[in-house]
Amino acid sequence: MSAAPSAATRRTVAFLRRFVKPRIRSLTAPLRRLQAVVETFSPERRAPFAPQIPGDWIPASSGAVATLFYLHGGAFLIGSPRLFRYAARAFARAGFDVFTPAYRLAPEHVFPAALEDVLRAYKAFAEARPGPFVIVGDSAGGGLAVSLMLRIRDEGLPAPAAAALSSPWVDFAASGASMRENEARDPLFTRKDILLGARAALGRQSARHPLASPIYADLSGLPPMLVHVGADEALRDDSTRLVARARQAGVDARLEMWPCVPHAWQLMSFLPEARESRAKAMEFLKARVAAATARLAAPRNGFAKRR
Image 1 (cartoon, rainbow, N blue to C red):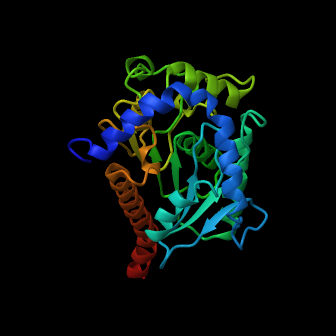
Image 2: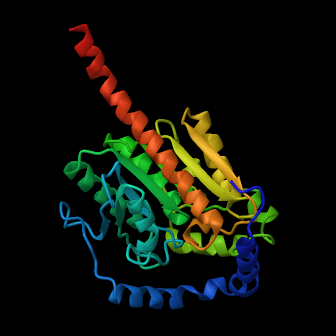
Image 3: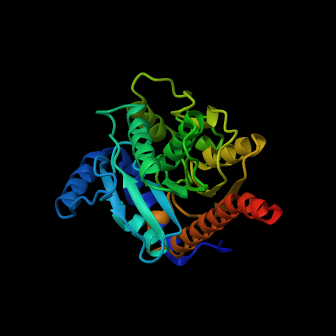
């Protein structure tokens, strides 16, 4: 990662802290209106082999190395596959077939609606595609990615080769120390903002339910994961604790902490740190796909030699 934050990042953080953070709770309605406009001019493109699954399909620009499930963020209150199509395209250009599943949003649909939707999509793809699969998730989509991997493990579905998570939201109870330590430094959120968003997404469910807040789940048996988070985020310790707990459970989990950057900065394509973080995620995913493919081929090769 960059040794020091770029000038573009410093300017962006100053803008967000001054003009966006004080208004963050009032932005859901206008952002939903913007989303509706985007969707009006961006036709849905479902995967041809799974037309029953709502979402956005972007085939790789050239020979695909894996099918990538992209789970968008938006605090479970906003967001759609077409709104985040620009982010998914970056992975398609890098050689992944990308599918961004649509999932129901809160407060109209509370937990576990989003998880049920992405699990249904993953099952359909696992039946229709030979794999390998990888998962990418930003913010709420990062937490949803961990919950999805838990369901994949528990149901014995074909496991993804790896996951790359950006500022994952994995603790609806907001119990990490960074919630208070970074409350003033975070360019976007306060702890109260995060708790209000969690309650809207949870309905009456407990904030410590292990599939809503996977920081409280048994993480054993999950695929390798790379986690990127900003050092100044209120959600910083969602990532640090997730990686620590995953490692304790025997998971190959890696953490990179970036200075100064705002929450889910990878979505801000004009930032050098966004491009650098995405490139590292792509490199990690490709390396894990290659390793998984080699492991699958090794027993067959060994058998052939013995014969």
